[in-house]
Image (cartoon, rainbow, N blue to C red; front, side):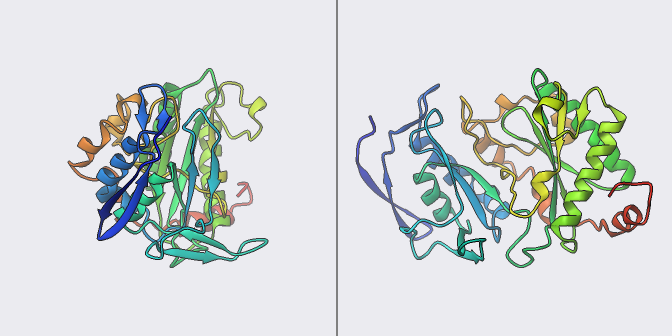
Length: 307
């Protein structure tokens, strides 16, 4: 049982009272809330640029990864006044999203057992027009990471032929995410269809290995190319975010060359801080802005293409 001890720490000049530091979040390996907090504090220099200005949804695991969990969009009532938030009109009432702008906010979130961080694909400066498109490769068992990696490399070939650049990261489980940074000029309705078009191209090329079938029963052990994460209100787990598996793996950005040989278990809260000290593997995502307008115009104007 975790002891009810409050420990004050100062991060970025902000005093945060850490509680239940010995609470076990990952029974396998005995990883505690203290391990989670330490990881997010250490990884902040490379993680924060991928979160700044993006409304954040978190997944909290107050009783560890084997207990109940819940998504949280609204900043809780006890949110410190120094935590920046952004109000969005919801269907029933406004939602005050947390914006992770500094290391203190990351530590505060981790102290609430927020394991997963899910930022928007758009920013508060252009909320309706995302600057990232994500191809989410989700293998249906018995397919696994090996099959997801194979299809990810096919996606790269398709993007290469389109003159576009995609940047891979491991999901932290068995999947792969391919991030396509774009100029924020098209609404989610267009960017999601664009992702869907790429998925259909890959599924048509390799119908025995890849699918865009939404119903799980129709995937039949193939890798699902999910474009629905590009719809408004949807999110994808952040680069460097921890995942709630049996071990504390991380959604790690990798190069295409690294993707060919790495494994998800290579990247955990133990190993990633040391790797990140060498630099941000996903730095290019922050500066690369690709104009997909020519492709959108061609796809919309082609009656033979379902776009």
